[in-house]
View 1 (cartoon, rainbow over the protein chains, first blue to last red):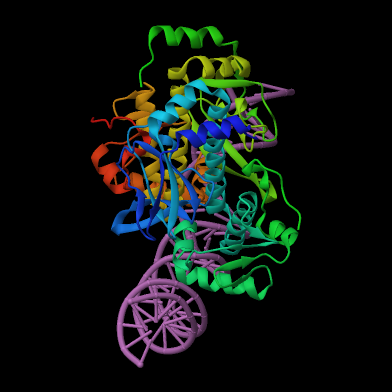
View 2 (tube, chains in turn cyan, blue, red, yellow):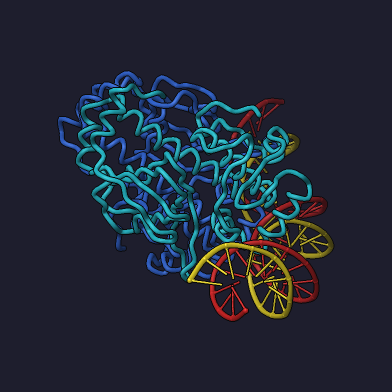
Length: 227
Length: 227
DNA sequence: CGTGGAATTGATTACGTTCAATAGATGTGG
DNA sequence: CCACATCTATTGAACGTAATCAATTCCACG
């Protein structure tokens, strides 16, 4: 879906201001009812939920171009939190402006609905990932997804992308311990499926990566890529 | 969110017709681009995705009152399938009618957005469930969720609800084998946390069930219940 | 240079899978 | 209404993936 110049202008006009969030800080916290919507323009964030013992589970990674919380115009309270994984820059949109847009500009409303549905589709795929795939394929699957999403956001160089996550965070999102992530990641590198250095991931062979991870890009609702 | 009489009428007017789907049949299949939206009025359905070897993973259960596919007005192709778990009766709404409603009736659009966001919240909780909780708690968690959702839909009698799923299907949704479901379910019944008979589940002690499963209803965005 | 978080590696344990066999339930046709 | 087929549930034994506990090493940063 492509926005027209006018539509982009409408969005730009309704933006309030930009803001920067420190690494590790919450952008929004569970239970809040924020009165503005956040669009990430730089850095990585993650959605997470607390579970017993003060542990986390990460349910999504947000990269530049992603919206944190369309929820604000419809739901009362956030049922999860969003945290800055790296320093994050966001543009804020007052909820009132968003409501106005939703009711007056059907095409923009459609665009927002589209991002919501893609978020949902990603969540579904993560659930399948967690429910059916062993550690090595699960890990590769998320690398495939992030490469493709980074590519769409214009953040890739060839078949590599910046990857600021620690193995701990990776574990918290996939449902593994950091110890196990370390072992499996090591194995994947030995097998030449991934190359990781300087907070940057390279997938040397896209087709091999996809087939190893059983990765079908259909759920991202975009074109596949070729390297 | 409560709809007015007029709003309900608008929805009723845009409905095309009802349809019945046999048990085990797809209501919509992955890859399709359906031109109508389905609302379940009777029976259970499930969203599922195929994985390698022809296995399934179930990503959602749909009960009366749930909408199958708001997607149709926005996305091109279904990224997953929906199957009738029992015989299912649906009301169909042509996509064009839905588009019309979305653009002309902001409050109804909001209601549809609300159901989408709750679906997403449920998915998030399922992901946390799969990623962090052991089998017994995971199983109880889904029972808690379904009891509450059934209650909202007016389908409970006291603290019991109809439960047409096989242990195989339960396993396919939680990421366990049917063998393991059988064992864990047996244990939960011995401990008096669940009572299961005639395709009907009873949770004798709601508070105990909730605390055992670490179940926090916030993600369903509705009131909790007391029995 | 020293400190604390992140990553690696090893040894042991445990939760859930797999394979297999049996019993129970449900439905169908003769 | 019984006989047979099929799907579902139960139970047991052996195995395997990932968790846990623990000790080091690596690295970024003040």
